[in-house]
Length: 502
Image (cartoon, rainbow, N blue to C red; front, side, top):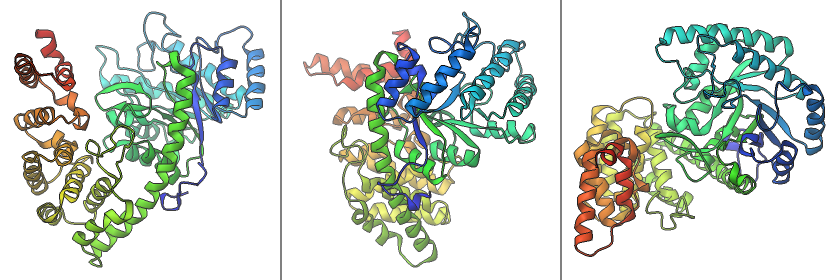
């Protein structure tokens, strides 16, 4: 199923699942029953405490019973191997495949393969590990390749599929790293890729869509969660920066037919509620993925028309409103569209991002000046969102585009239009605005009462000086008997060094 063929009523080609590591306070049969009850048709089974001991004496009997239960509940299964303290009670995820001594890890992965074969699981997912202190990257990579080669051979004999999961901070951190590993091992057919869409906003240079497309037909397992760019922390949907509809639409475009399972390993305290809310969010995201499919057709046709001269950018940019309307992109927590923009804002921004691939960038830079100068407030927001779309690629923008972008960003920040100011502090400003100007942009949002949720990469760029400015502002407000906005505290928290010194 391609994105262009996707509609809001299309059936998902892949199966939605839920990870048992998010049900750590429930016995496994109960957890599986609750997962199926919510409408999931797959499960990501993490081996180890508390659900399935891979070293239990009666493991064979347990696996037979578990296979029967999975059949009764109609659940597909993938095997996850990320239990934190299974192999070493004192050190999380140790030993890893990149450690000096990794025999117990290799033995465990062999056991996971045996379990997958018994359960007829879709794949066994595993990670590389964090490089030990004092070990060079070259040595770590050599250890990894030799051990994965051994595991691949064992899995081939068992007819089990393996999937390497890139993890932030590990030796294999991105999908590109997995592809390198496969290539060095001769591209074994049974070694493929797991993609956690949350990880993509932390480490993947081209984001969620880019990582999924790069994995392409090698994608064998998907983990679903939300995440913020500055922290490897699995969050419920809606609490981070992951574009869930885009991720689901991309999976449909790839005609992915495997398991996509919710991964919330630190949320067992609310497992039944989160399972219910998560599948609701996924279904809503799938509905929105249909909108992305419709928008994709419009974007492709529009970009082609502009590139070939059969349509003008100014006219098409204006007509974008007719295609999607002016509704807020996140109506639940931004009903006016000030913080995160409207559907029209984002469609215009995506159009500019597409044009970066079909027009000379010097020509596009001049067009942005014209669009912004001649546009109304909504069109100006679209231009600013477009700068953000251009800046999120893996390549640095040419000087001409950066110069124009800075000019328009600074002009936007001099206005008092909330939506325009919020759009100006997106990814382009986070990447290219100088620190002095960026600090003042953040404080301007506080002055105007605009939530700092609008600011891209706040934690990464916040520094002691911003914290000092925010602290001074809070002191002035307090002295004047006026309330201090909650976001002032957010700025102070974002600068850990300032908080420590004070």
